[in-house]
Length: 133
Image 1 (cartoon, rainbow, N blue to C red):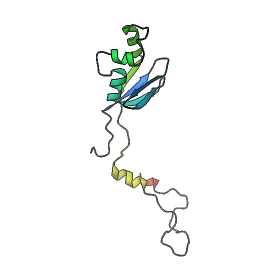
Image 2: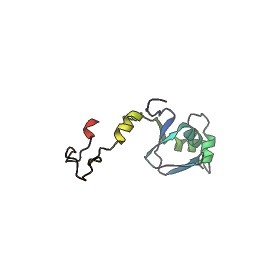
Image 3: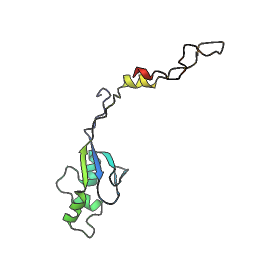
Image 4: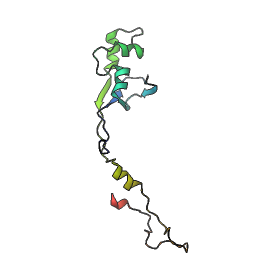
């Protein structure tokens, strides 16, 4: 395990700068690449859909329908409008120790009281333990 840090090295951020939405499928998952909207996908999906990391893009052009009535160079012009970038590491710690601390709610009533009265030691402004972060 990587101690709760998300490994983003197996992903690539794809941004479609064409004038049309691109829809594709890989391993039973449908992907939609909206115009100007970054989408983080596994490198295998990007490899299949766009031939990311491969010199010959012919298979991607056929799958995407970009060679229907176009030359290879015209299809490559479309692909050149799509950017592929590293996915940045998240700025938050998602380790199991941190998750368990965050997910424990602070009771606002004395659960052990048998008289049904509220615990006077509870915070009255309901701020909980947010100051502990």
